[in-house]
Image (cartoon, rainbow, N blue to C red; front, top):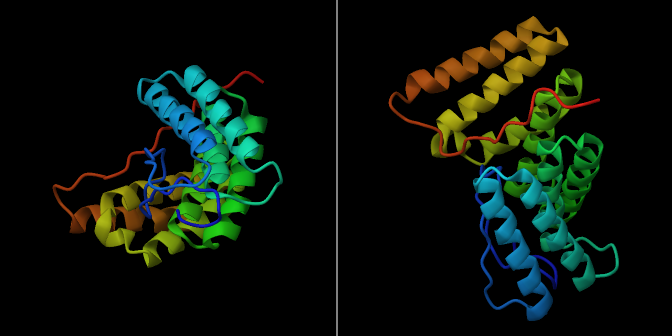
Length: 217
């Protein structure tokens, strides 16, 4: 992620659709960026420990500092990542409306920063797809998966993480099944089977953190 005057100066893999540790490397505005970095890494540690409430607080502080760093609304990669991380945390603590808003804002920002089919943009697409899928909003999830899957295939994920992609096809099948399109669901299941059959003994490089199936209404 190396766009804009304000940035994490980190990198992201095309199919790394979860939180990633970021590293400071010659960035501008070092004091504020250090706060963003510290709160982000604190959020990641809380997330890895399964403490989504603490992760939410730390990711929220990261976003606050990212907004201080650039008070206007111009897109920056650190703000996009902060929105994304906080949105995921909100989803895991059942604040679904806030999660949807934050993740959608991050998606729009990343489309401007890195393009509509970049690896980082697909992270946002998959996350929204999973958020809706895991809460039973199947029709809402489908457009995000339909955008993200061809993009990561073009990025070479079929070779770099075929089982991770097979798991994505499982999600696509579940979404299509839930939405009542049995033909597309079967096609997605066939793709998942093809990838697993062609890659015996391999495991997924990335395993998504699933959202709770039931949240208080």
